[in-house]
Image 1: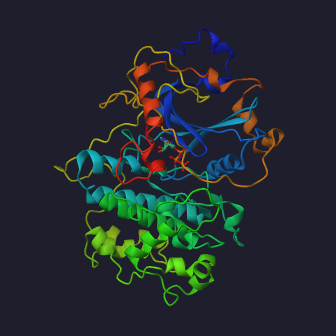
Image 2: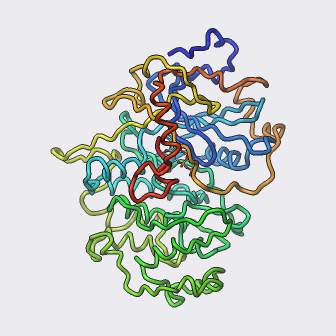
Image 3: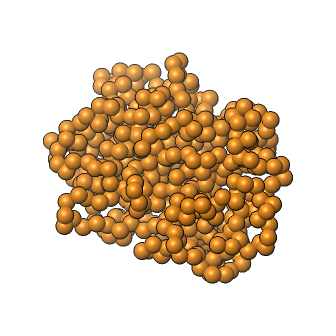
Length: 468
Ligand SMILES: Nc1ncnc2c1ncn2[C@@H]1O[C@H](COP(=O)(O)OP(=O)(O)OP(=O)(O)O)[C@@H](O)[C@H]1O
């Protein structure tokens, strides 16, 4: 695939030359995510996450540094693998290359809800959940709390040797935690609101791995019902973690927490200070089973209610959850979550990721048009063909961590610059670019930018606009 830029190949730093860029696949709070192919092995797809420059442009953000430090030490089948780290010394922009995963739970759930209009089969739900817990158990036993678990961060591998294997991604907010625990206030607000644990919403100063288990409970319920369990309206623009509507949604389903069942509740800042507002409505009759349409006696219900235990100290841990009866009864969980082992069971064909081939590494839009994306790669071809779509416009709201910036010279401590093999002045925009974009796709992108909601029911704008 050519780059449409003549013979600039020899000027490119080595790391750029090893990839063919296919296009943009996503945008998060911290940067853009691109799909690329390794030239030496065209069957190998890579997701390259480019971190945004800090506002003051004085180095690599601490979020990025933290992500690298964590990821380089992490190795587990259910955690996404960091294959390479690249840094552009000219502007200190940072590129992390991960193994590419064709699917994520956000898209899988959306596909079942909006396209096939049918529940995810039990085997798939159980296998996805088991693998998610398995990865999380590994992270927690290594003193890592993810803190931002949500369906889009839980990736699932497409066709190939690892088909249907879950990979936990996006450690932008993950942090090694050690006793004594660091207060939350130092790090900004964590966990996207729908999956945010009640202790955080009530202003807990310390977090534990229990916040991830709450998020897993919300995701488990969403896999079962195809709807987010607690869809609170976020009040933006405040560093205060208190989100009344989110708490209200939780209380409505689970009933009000009480100091009898959750003794440390009374110590939480917002339970005291906002007691009138929090307890304005009294929800005495928990209704989780009616939301889920399942028997409270079923093992799935039992496991879920243990994940949604109010008191974080009583909430089930990942290790305990893996031992739960739910996973010991038929259908047993398997490694390929997407393909039920029983013959005759219908296999759902999930769509490949949409790829926006109009955006290059610098995040600029190209209006040039040429041929469609060449065939022969999973993302652009396969059974579903290319999804050339406009990019999402609105990054998810989340706060940057308030820490001093790492200066460029400081990077050598992490041995990143040497790995990157880049000379100063090199521009990552020189990356070979696929120019297979119709002007129509660009127009569509502009139109959708004006409509962040994209007409999807039940999702607030930042969720609705997640996909192109
Ligand atoms: N290794 C990967 N393979 C394939 N897709 C990925 C990979 N990592 C991330 N993505 C996808 O890229 C998109 C953006 O990811 P990113 O982690 O930057 O942001 P996010 O999780 O959507 O939002 P935020 O960072 O604001 O929480 C998501 O759709 C995600 O599923």
